[in-house]
Image (cartoon, rainbow, N blue to C red):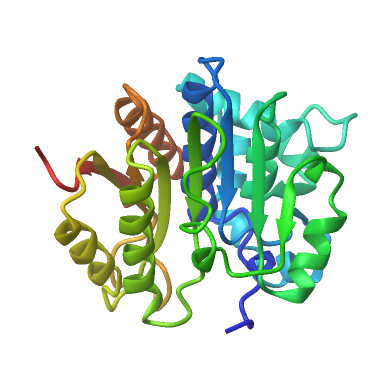
Length: 283
């Protein structure tokens, strides 16, 4: 299906969960000199202006990134993530929330870490979103494809670089996406068993994500950490009440770092916001 456009949801609490995770993961990976391949299976347009009609209509960023811009957190990784976000904003105003004019998607977060010898591959099937993605100045030397990344990411394995960071974040408009994502993750790890893979999924009232979790558990792959960031109490809304991430082969100490960072975020959001992290398949 091609109806989904992430611009209506950019900067919401799920983006905070996902992109802060990408940032921390890259901070850990970039401590070593060996080359990395970055793959984003569902890249979107890459950069979202607040003045766009899509972001204006839903304004979901008001319950996601904006509270973090208004209230300082006590975690250094959250602070460094917000500092990176600030490099995209207009200058001349002392208030971060007032400077906030653009929100970047995961391709931007991945592309900013590219070094000589690294590679980046961004997939986006929606023709309108792909057109935007191709036109972004940050894309640079990255390869962009107007295709469904789930159909290509396994075929790309093994990649040419010693290390791989892959972000898998479909819209889950189709119920079978959950099973397909689990299948893709299993095949990818079978071909590249040391790959660092981040799988995002929504937490919805009907609990569809359990299909994904059950299939991943059944695959037998170890070293998969599950992070769930709750924004609202279950039943508070008909839509997403929380956001989930599966991270295969997280770098050493990343789960602990992310737990502290997400707990700090939940503290700023207040109310029923909370984070829970655990190993999906304990050894």
